[in-house]
Length: 415
Image (cartoon, rainbow, N blue to C red):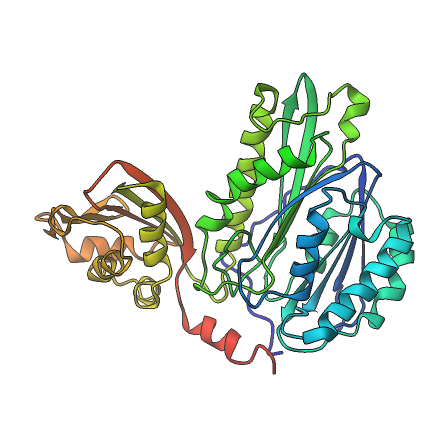
């Protein structure tokens, strides 16, 4: 690989500190899968009784670990998660499934569970065969060494071109019992999620049945991870897993089995907030970025239409390049709205860059002043607001600009 990219200008000064969570512990190792001198293997061990939910890439060329997770999720239980970075184990034919099988065998033995209670995920280079023998023998020792307070180390072990680990924590009440939600994810390039982000793992000590957990995850992924994009490319490895250890039952929490039940309302809000936080952190670490961009679309026929229009803008290379160049070229917004295929009234279209309306009712705004808007474009955070004039629905999408550094990073990713 080429030299490491400089840190994102949006890298946090301090990382979120995730409190230890009952029923789950983490361990990491340097397995030498691709990277030298850094951790690239993560194990998360959960107590018996933990439930699982997940959303996975809809890519037609998905990885072997994704296929396995689809099988494992039908059981709704979890005991151990194994994640590696450096090799995606995607487009690796039967060798890919063989590597997964070896991993599952050793992981299940490490904690004494059924293979269906094992989850695996991989991220890194596509098309390179993965030798699970490089790390499978480490799983037993890692499972024994796992500690509850190692979330930051876990987040670092799954990074590839990320310049900082993404972590978030929230708390909520379920029936008078306090519960905690911790999450971490990775992603900086090949990001246009289609059911999940690159890799995201969320843990809670709440006692929630798997069907309810799955319903909550499905509900919130749409307006968080699936409203974030860096470059319009959906990964073969998108995996978002949510685990509930049930440890809060010891504090009096009754098992929650209905996602719509009033007692889960606060938990649902906290989960959405955590997922939104992580999605924005990924967008703020886009490969080579110089600007973080929020695109708000209103006046659409439906939320789905508003989201599609916003993504059309967020994934437009020519618009993203203009933002990188600090050029207030609202004509490229007009183009992106039009190509989305969703209903938009050209003669009612209104566009604003930050507080400055640049187009109103289908033409340049009378108050538009090039130098004023160009000065706004020098900000690190750019807000683009669009009203397409055909309805009342709205959606928000988060993205970043497209710079020369993005090309440099991806031009020599494998070399």
